[in-house]
Length: 429
Image (cartoon, rainbow, N blue to C red; front, side, top):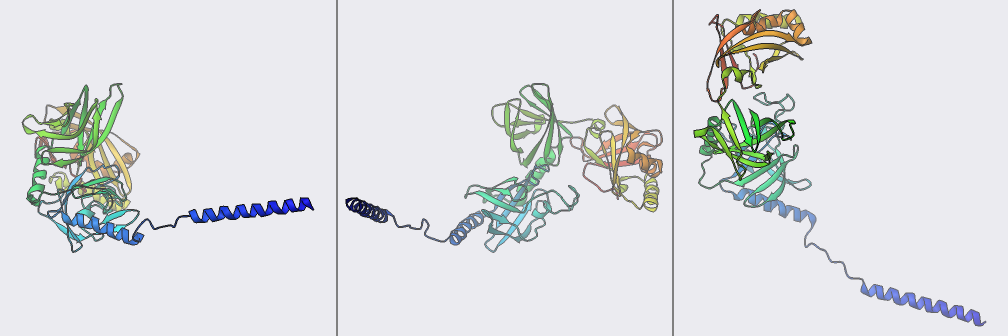
């Protein structure tokens, strides 16, 4: 009996203890208050409105440093953008005529962060994102691989940093000074780019010297590093009225460079910082320039009346017998690359440099497709004005000795045979 009473008392004590603990815990539990005074949807709406007001607040618009492609292979472009309160944006760009503008709709939307989208076709900004570029830049279906939607990362009245939604290329915008005339500003960039252009360049940083070529707005630097390793690197850049601004900081020879300022008197670009790196513009003999590694395009319209009948014969036979059309044909170094229908091929040339402005070419080889089209006669005719049956020699001239965009080849033995090669991509017909 006594044992039963002890057990009962212990149970009563335990129950009382648990009751007290629960009571204490209950009294200590705080009330849960909302951290925010507003709903998530309303907060997002308000944040987007603040960003929109900042976009619209730059009364003379923004300078957008625009880089298409995820690897920035086509370099950067100065785009001027003014965001109106009516939902339309006015855009200009140094790629186009300086006075040209295009207006289209824009909006700010929420998509894992604020996104600026140009959601109505705009012939300037969509030039860089169209799958078929109107100037034939990039592959069909790709174009220049640009963006028209951008995720905003940093927004202030002084600077906006955003990234291409597709490419993740960094895009920065800064407000344009109220007294800046858009047309004059873009013209100053275009004039500077022309004046700063050379066929080849040399870059010197520390004890490193690099050979530099330009394609679109990207430098290709080839050099041997301190250990003797051969390095090739691409440096995308933006043209400014005074020089070049690099997409990323360049570090070669232990010298870090972000901008290069042009000194016209010495044909040189001086770097920022204290490293003393310089980019030198080189006036290159035309025959070296022609075989230096840039693409030089053939086209029917740039042949004299000597060469056109041979191309007529080749094109007619190619279409009649193979159902194909010549898609492109260009010279790079000592190789002529072509594409007939869907079949690419190449012809290797032996070149002989004679002084600065004379050159000889002779066919020395071909790949399997090149052999097929040559033995079947087609390219015997396409190539005849350029290298004949046993080689030809030409006198060279150009449009701008500092930075040629066309090189004119005049046959030494028959001056009626004239071939104009263009640096700008050109279809053969």
